[in-house]
Length: 146
Image 1 (cartoon, rainbow, N blue to C red):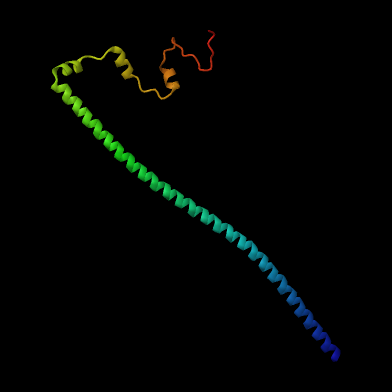
Image 2 (cartoon, helix red, strand yellow):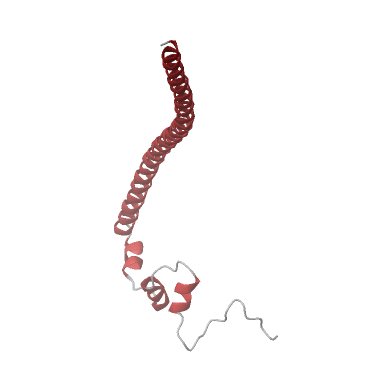
């Protein structure tokens, strides 16, 4: 019976050793998983900080743009007021002076009418399109022969 008790104790010891080894391996696996998860958490935290910084920068930029827009609106209103005042002064000058009134009623020269009829050129392509075909415009890359 002694032999059976020793076998039982050995079996229990073997089970305890196997359980201990299993527990150690399980803890190592958990620690490895914890390391991976901690890295993911740090990366996610960094992305959140970056996102928050970007949001703050965009908000700051939006406030600056709003301030600039308000300043532009004030400047535009002041310019419109000045233009309105000048136009009113011109109307009064035209109506008050018979000489200016007679001059203002005369027809504009044909060249001025033609220039006023064309839209403003915003680049060389617009100007080239406005030139008649029989008056070709030389390309800027062409070198003259003389």
